[in-house]
Image (cartoon, rainbow, N blue to C red; front, side, top):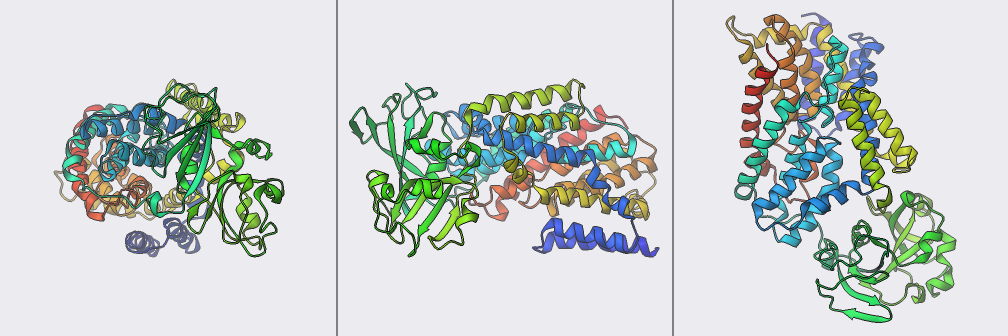
Length: 588
């Protein structure tokens, strides 16, 4: 074996071992591997960096902006609230999770869908009295299955399609994968509904309950033009909130206490909630509720540039002993105080009349640069932003949904390529104000893009040094091997790589192997390429292979072995259906 081939193989093995057994970030591991290949002249810089210009990688970057627009406008959360409903049994509740999640993930980033649904499902699980551990892992699996139905459903499909275009000039259509993806979704989704109640544990998540957290009083007003006027408290989704509860309603000078779930909401009702800091963000996500503080609109801060901040008053705070009104807090800090907590206890009464003391914890609505601006100032002992606390701009939700539909339509009809359609949609999200430029930048996950792009270098080196041919010869270990048997081998190895490393890296590494195997057998490469797409997405057995599996790990209170309980039968079912259908549709 030549030096370059030996070095490439050693680098590949080192990357796999580091990804599986070390805590080093995947993007750092793969970037280091790319650097080694360039330094030792295995690849030229232009060959190593080819992944950064791959259409699939660029399309994924544009999709992050589209997903950000859907998230910032609350479009996904709104759709989720409409579709979840109030089922009568555990199996029906699982159906309500699987169907909308898989449909949405077919047309937008899986990670964004799961991120938006996790808090909604946590709240919903408490409302229908089902353990959240029974629902969150099916949520992740449904997103994975839905992503296999279209070309844009998962980044893996886009990456492999980009490789295919670069190698052969062949491009897949938007719904080409649906011939296999839809049957896989129906059968595997049915298995989830049948087996999850039996196989998944009855366990609480790690979300802190608001009784043991710092409590605040949060006041919101029923918007006269909003959709919850005339609805009952229960219908408006204000019962069994995750982080707080409704205590009072102030209506035309009257106070309604011990609020019943059947009380109808009227325009301009002032709703008083008690809960943890996160309750303010949770409530701002309900379409039809607006802050009761008129001054929030006078802060001069655009809606999408606001966030919720906790700040602890320090000994050098200028307004100690003064009321909030006397301190002119809003104009001095360009921030509005939503609530005050003292020694872990909420303070009732009008915000403007509260005298500020050292150690008071303030819940603020401020600009998203408030934390960096005041973190080192002596006014506050501690300043921290609540994650994902920007209030959704529901007024632009129809624009965001319309943009997504236009993108799908344009690419499905062939009017625009996937790359062109994604650029069009991302530009429309920015131009319409669905997402700000700063938020769009923050939502582009550079670490994921770096992993995908830099893994192309390993694939290119394996081809250039002849290692791919050696592996292909090893897979064809006897002369009589059939294309279908080779297809099974390619699928199983890809699944193994996916469970151990990441789905995209597994797909990039297996692509040249699949092309070489097809060439050696003298058959069409398409069945092997489609098999890689499905196998790389079939990560059900461990939380490592797919990001959405990791996202539900903590909120669902799962253990590592919980994934195998449901994941093994699911992985077998997906493999059987995929390997049966793929050769029927894409002939050898």
